[in-house]
Image (cartoon, rainbow over all chains, first blue to last red; front, top):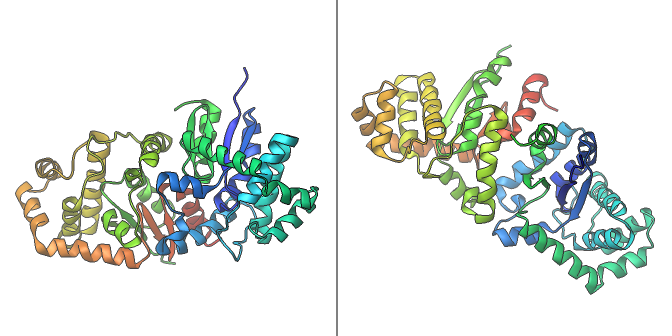
Length: 202
Length: 202
């Protein structure tokens, strides 16, 4: 029996997406699944849902910052909160979709992992063109080519289409997973998602 | 060594509070702790934090309703979403604080459990005076006495003070737990909280 891939929506600027990105492929593989990675911009989904980032509310921000780090320790992954946070990550996301379409989806997923790790283990500012070009070079891309991609109307449009598709699929936050039509929002739905993968609907 | 109680903040109209209310005492007891139950009004904390209920956002509402039921099934507790939801629950909360102060905290906690179960397993509308009086009678209270409590300025003021204290303690949602000064928000932080109770700070 062929099992459908898990759709995994993430934003490069989302700490909880980073945490999930460290286990999503392994969890899927244990259940004979693959993962379709989708780089999106939370800003666009927040706007569509009239939501705001948790860290934009002062009382919630202090808790969220504590919870990011504690959740990472709980999941056993290294974590630092970048000095500048959150940051706009459309450039990294456009490079993702270029790799996805022009190279191959697996390479795009690897870029997703690399970008999230750079941001949340080394504090790399993905909104800074110089730092993003350095990261692209470390990743084995030609830095100037990467910059041309994120300035290209074609990849701007591609990302916009993906955001719209995510919103149409009901995505309003990240990380967000869809398994056989069932939506799971948050790294903290891992247990519920694993149960679904193991035993089916419950 | 004496361990401090766990502070558990809940709203009678919160499905996730209901789920947590079904395990919080057992989890605490396994780690030699007791639980201080605090009935609060999410509306007041949302206002202080400039937040809104998740179900007030259309795109999030559909997911939330699905997630309430799935989370309950995952936790192994029965669940129905009341026809009228969410509802204002200040009357049930005032009865809680009256029982807490004038009878004893354990009786208030029992009222908390009874109210949450009535609402989320039988669909009882706690905002309806007649239904709340019936529930009070089932619980062994004199129904008219319960009604006098929720109409009494003294218990209105008591609840207001508790809301203010919760907000001052950093509470902005429910369920919310504080363990030795460490805040945990959401029934989905059970794993992280249990680890804290078992091994201390991590």
